[in-house]
Length: 196
Image (cartoon, rainbow, N blue to C red; front, side, top):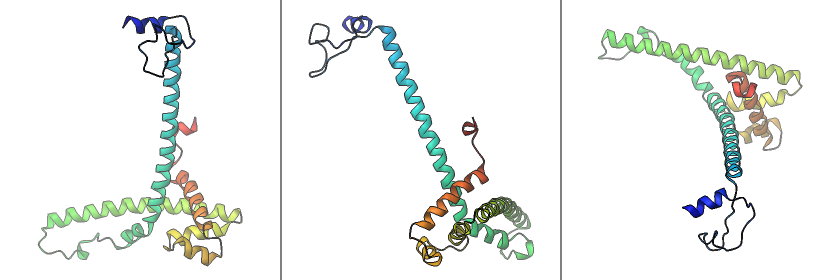
C-alpha cells in the first residue's frame, strides 16, 4: 500500500525501468509515477471526455429515435385515417350483445377519445406534410414529394416507386429519408439542447 502511495505522490513522471518501485507491476508492464495533482487532472480530463462522448451518443440516439418515431407514424397514417373514418362511436353502430348500457357508454367514450386524439394527430401530420409538399414544389423538386406520397399514402415499395418515377433503385429511399428528417422537426420541434 505504501509502495502505491509513493508512486502517486512521487515527483518523477517518466517511465521507470524495473526497480523496487515497479517490482509489483504485472510482467511486461511498467508503472508511471505521477504527482497527485497531475493524477487528479488526468482523471478529470478522462471523466470530461467520457461525459462528452456520452452526450454525443445520447444526441445521436435522440435523433435516431425522432426519425424512427416519424417513420413509424407515417407508416401508420393510413390506418389512423381508417380509424377516424370507421371507428364505432355511436350507440346505433354498436351491435354487441350482452353489454349493459353502462358498458356500452364506457366503450363508446373510450372510442371517441381515441378517435379525437387520432384526429388531432392526423390533422397535425396533414399540416406538416402540406408544408413539405409546398417546399418541394417551390424548389422544383415535386418528384421527391411524389415518392414520399407513393410510399406512405399509397403503400408502394421503393422498387415500384423507382420504376414508376423512372429513377435509380436507391433514389426513392434517399428522398423519403430526407423528407422524414425534415418532417421530424415539423412534427416534434427542436430539442432545447439543440437550440443552445
